Length: 584
Image (cartoon, rainbow, N blue to C red; front, side):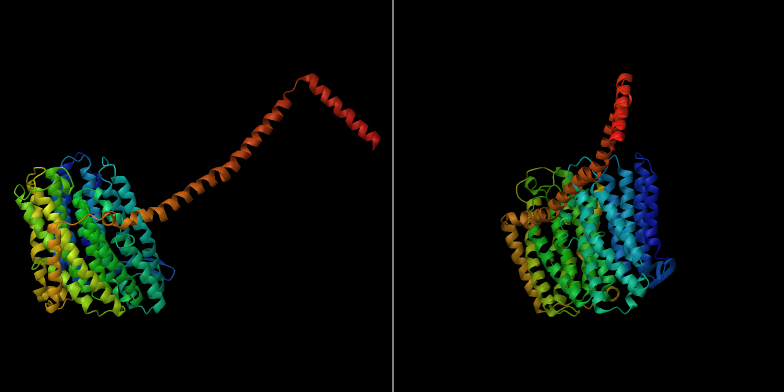
């Protein structure tokens, strides 16, 4: 059996070599990136066919704490690794043409490989410290890749925002890992899961971990970085939204799910419901097609978090896998459109279905899967989330199930509305800008991703797949009529035209609220600290120096006094001393 450690090791090795390539070595960089991703995908497939593995070796021992180096690979981990490898391979192939004129292509390829390796490390890590390493490396890679285009004015700010916002959540994530590891005396995941913690300890640790999940997976209130991250290259948007970064938080919760108490899951359920509706409503009012897809990711991750809140890790993972397929398809197809027309705005598009038939049909399949149109992949996984929300089985209070169920149903209608609006605005109506089909290395990854976007949901009828995820058989009952009716209603409203609501377009002004409550006070505090440092600390030091210099100059002046004056001063002092002696 190929050890699971090779999953992150192969793209990591490709990244190390890639960083050593000169900037003009485009062909070796392309071969390295595609080869590393293809090898990782192959290893993931072989791992999925192998037995469960949980191997570790002691790495560090700090007092009574033990840090191990090892992997924990089961069937869900192998399936997620396949999704990561497949999307990474599609992105690497697609980027060869999409970044054909990029002068920094080799470091870009290396960073994508490192990003892939970090996510795969999170997937197979058998120790919380190893998981944390992959978690943080993903944050660094996202910063580098979002800010890759140095000619784009908004890219640096978007990269910094993504880095800072996710770091805020990561503080809680780090503390949560510390609580669990110190309590168990080991950071090995098997030991942590087997340890008998107190209820309060588990609740505190779960809430701290959810802070990191909210940051990485762009959940309310730490979701604001994700739409701005669209400043990065479109293939990177596909990678972040489909298979890495935002999926990492959901996956970690499934990995550590037995540790989450009812109170922590209740918080997760509220967070999921708010995020699901917030993202969907914001998507209805965007003109930039990448921002529509970005807000849809925020909403769809809310579905996954909602499934976890009601106790179903299998439904969350199933939707994670189908979402990886159709969201990668949608972003890469959007990149084809942007490449053809030179704009990301729907208001400058329209009527492209005749000029870009492959992209149109692929985009239509992706949007149908996103909306939950049967029998496409998203229908089966989203229906699974709605079903488990209606029949909750986890430790969370019963009201959490009702909250997630109602939010999920509302999300079906809203998602259908903005999906149809996006399809109509881009490919139907008046032709504002003429386009053309993308080159083969961009077109074929899109066409291939359309296959799992259409068919992956049918894997629920495959017993081996259900057993791997722990899924039950597909649930089709009378309640399925309700989401289908909502989908149809939303599609009709979206085709007729959605009114532009300013609050939706500005995502309920949460960016402005964060700027008012967090950014401005932080800047004010920074200016106050700087002023105190310059006027207080530096002022005292520099003032002492200036006073010493003035005193020294005065003494030097007195020392250099002319001889007559000096003699007169000495004589006067002698007379004064003599007079004092007589008087006293």
